[in-house]
Length: 337
Image (cartoon, rainbow, N blue to C red; front, top):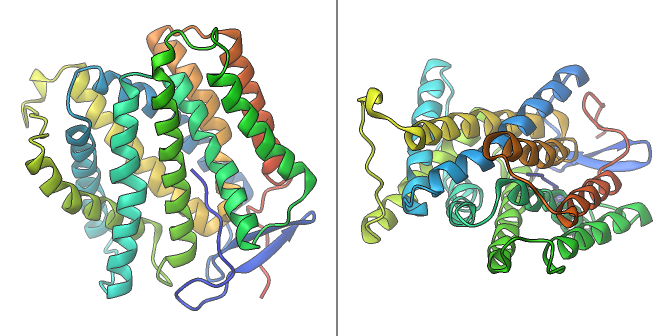
């Protein structure tokens, strides 16, 4: 999942560009940059963790539980962990009209909508293929940034977007690519989820209240998601029973659900930290690792095998990311203005 910023966020604090080898990148002006070695380590951790969630999602979704109920539990567990951390670290969440609207937008675009769709898709599409769809987030980010005038339309990056589109075509067009052609609509549903994640990333980069910490953003997002999903779960009778606190009765589904919540919370919080401290474009490079590790986790856990078309789609998508992502990262780069 990636971010791109707008030249003038609603908070009124201009975004300062950091020029790296001719590439213009944007990140919040009040953020101190992170040591490059630490930034790359966090990027690797986030990518490997998020890559695992596709396989965990499939374990859970294959149980037949309602996707809304699954996403609800994940949000409850995540909110519980983050609220506890906020209390322990004495993080202060300022409640204003702006911050409430910000958390609602993040909860919708970063959890409720894409989370439910992905759990629906996970029961029908392999983790490896889902991980390829998530790689479209940086491509969507760059396209949006170029449209907003925040990024220059360099030939290499335009080619990257074209490569990304080609990757999806190679994934869904050939008859021999997928073992079951009926999953194609769910692949496009997963791509819509990727669009939601990109939109949420834009909201974080554009609308985050000044001085808010990554932990506070993640906490507010999950709490907002829980509050919004509660009436939906009740109205749709989508609650998934979970034998708490008798963990000795848990099976693979329960452990996968809790594990996915913990992994997601950890990765998301660190990812927000990367956005704030190292810039949204640097953080977008998480998609490389998420995509590759998602395929590899699927092979390791489910013994998946893929057609040559899917491997070609993966290779083209990685090439697309390489073209779209700046040649040098801005972790540790100084900011102007």
